[in-house]
Image (cartoon, rainbow, N blue to C red; front, side, top):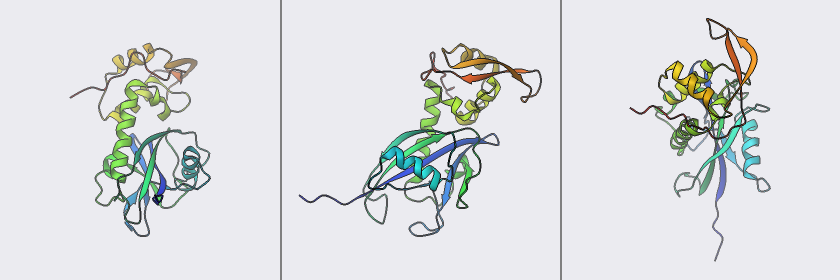
Amino acid sequence: MSVPRLAVSVDLVVLTVREQRLCALRWRRDRPPYDGAWSLPGGFIQLDEDLPVAASRLMAERAGLADVRIHLEQLQTYGYPDRDPRQRVVSVAYLGLAPDLPASSRAQVLWTAVDELVHEDRAAFDHRRILCDGMERARAKLEYTSLAAAFCPPEFTVAELRRVYEIVWGTSLDPRNFHRKVTGADRFLIPTEQTTTRDGGRPARLYRRGDAEQLRPPMLRPRA
């Protein structure tokens, strides 16, 4: 029995909060297939390369985000036969989350608000689906894990954390109820001795992310 020929790629869903909007990195393609369409940054893995190593390399080479503190986790594998018109390609998607990231060093790569990107007409391959899966993974993980703090700077206020939840979930949250829940979650937030007025108004206490991975109790999304 012959071994089937296929290629393996890594595609990156990189999300951050910029100017009070959830944004993703997009790559503007300049060659076939899908010349002129948007795609996620990514590329093929090398023969001697493990998947996490490939994801980190492509984060620097294709996303243009070298030496940036970022949460990176495997999202999902996409492998239906006709997803790439060139040949059979299996893609392993990774989800990256970080605070307000800088502009990419690559001219082809731009930050775009996700609510605009998912409605753009021309998307390469199945990258619209991968982006939507990454957005839903991020929204779901904010309910049960401490991942929301990955969108925040090392020290942040409860109001800044609340804005992350509101932007990612796309809904408003009651400030007092939110403060009670996040400060009451076991090992989620560690208070510092510092305060800040960058939120406006009275000085607000600064917090750091604790060592909890799971939120107990969870922060459940408001349901319509």
